Every structure is written in structure tokens, then in C-alpha cells.
Length: 381
Image (cartoon, rainbow, N blue to C red; front, top):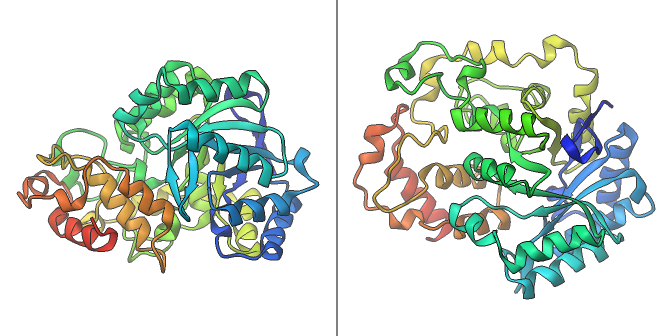
């Protein structure tokens, strides 16, 4: 296993990390088998955003006795209320949830304390100069957390967090689907016959974020690196071609400032598949030639979350609604985290007035209105 420094935290983290969200529904024996396999490979970083008490206890028991071998990201604001996950900035919920996380993971500190899931401007503005942020910073002062980070999917919010000087690292969603666009703002360039996989093909705000993090020493741990397996199936991939786990991991690790890719495992064999990256040949890692061979039609009617459909008269974040819908339908049951993220959006698919303006601006001819109908049906709002 190779290790990278996580920005100015100074922490040396394994290139391949552990995202235990798939522990939901697993026994403690199954959880321990996964954690043991991770440690066999030298994986040393995990993120625990999950608020489900059983998942937390499962993870804590699986790494008990090995605390000094793990770098743990713990979250402020991932709470469990009335039997379900709810994000909160209210200290009456934040404090007991954070203390519960420490207790269930059998530790008195987290290496990184995460400002949990901030994707919208109003939420970021609310966090600044708030009792919530005061509590987060107090935990660093007293040593309960050693460093401050934040989880987000929004590059604009991420850039503001980095520029604020508050965060020392980010957990950010990185994969080719979320990142890549043709290299200019000219919509005619979207008609190119071949996809350009170079840096110029990354959406400007995301490329700027990676460069900013590199410059400011803010390290990145990656979530959604495998896009919930969507990229492994050419029928579900927007590129119309399949990538391997090794290729997806290599893509993320070649972004500036990225230190580790946190992969979700539901069995030890999945750890093997991810750790295979460490011994893979260069040809096995090559994602660029695969994407370069993807024909233009691979994009047709598939949302790439590019936001060129904006503005929406109803204020719907169309790209985020589509992204959450696509993540949800990859599972047999809608994950509670995805449902809560959807509920927390300021506008929902049910607010769509079917004006059709979004489709006229979409370079990939996505039937956005139909997407909204499907999302409303799936999420119930």
C-alpha cells in the first residue's frame, strides 16, 4: 500500500481507504471480516458519516483494539432521529450524535472532525459565525478532533470553505461522470465526435477547486469514486463504455490534492478488487484511452450533471436531483442518506412546472421533465 500526505494535516493516509456505508444490514462478524481485510492491505483511513447506531457499533467493534492503526473522519451533524438519518446544525441534536459516534467507535478523539455535508450556499452561510461552528472549533481546541474537514459535492461551496481557512481537508465526490465536460463553454463543442479526457475536459469550477486545494495544502479524500458501480456497466454509464474499479481509482488519484479514495465494501472480495490498484500495471490503470473511444452518442439523453440546464424558474437544482435519482436507482431500496440529501434540497422535482426551458439548453438532449416526474415518484416529493 502506498501512502500520501493529506494536505497540511500532515496525516499519511493510504491511497485506498474505507467507506463503511455498506455496513448497513451486515452482521458484526461480516463487518469485522471487511475491516480485517482492510488492515491486511494496510488501509488506514475510514470515514464514519453514518448515524445509524447499528452501523456505528458494527464499525467500532470491527476496529476495536486497533485504534492506533486507523485515521478516522468523524462527522458533526449526522444525527439519528426517530429511526432515520437527519442532517442537523442544531446543537441539541449535533452534540449527542457526535458524542454517540465517539462512544460507539470506542475512541476519545477523531483524527478529522468533519463539517457534515454542506452543498448549498444558504447552509454554508448559516454555518459561518454559528454556535454549530463554535462547537466544531471547540472540539479542535480541546483535542477531541485533531483537524477540521468538510464533506461536500458542490465545488463552489468547497472553494469557499477552502478560502475561509476553516478546513484543512475536504471529502469530495470525484469520478469522470461528475468531473468531465468538453473543454469550452461553446455549446457547439459538445457536438464533437470524440470525448476529450484531458484536464481541459473537466468542468471549470471543479478544475479550479482541485488547483486551489493543491495550492493551499488542503487535501482531498474521495467519495463516490466508483459512482456506485454505474461506470462498470456500459448501459448505465453516460460514456457508453465500461471502466474498471482500478481505472476509476486511478482517475481520482490523478486529480490534484487527492490523497485517498474511500471505497465502500460489502464483502472482503470488494477490498481485494480495490486494493488490486496497488499492483496494477499502467495499462490496467489507463482510463483515458477508454474514454477517448467513447462516441458522442454515449452522452445522448444521459445527464452528466453539467448544470447547463440552468436557470430553472422554480429554483430546482436539476443536476443534483438527477444525480440523487441516479444514485438511488442503483440500489434495491433508496438509501436513507440519499433520501435525506434529496429532502434537504431547497426545491424538489415536484416543483417542476414543465416549462421545458432546461431541455433547450441541455447539450445532451436530456428529457429533464421526465427525469423530474421519475424523481418525484421515487422520492415522493
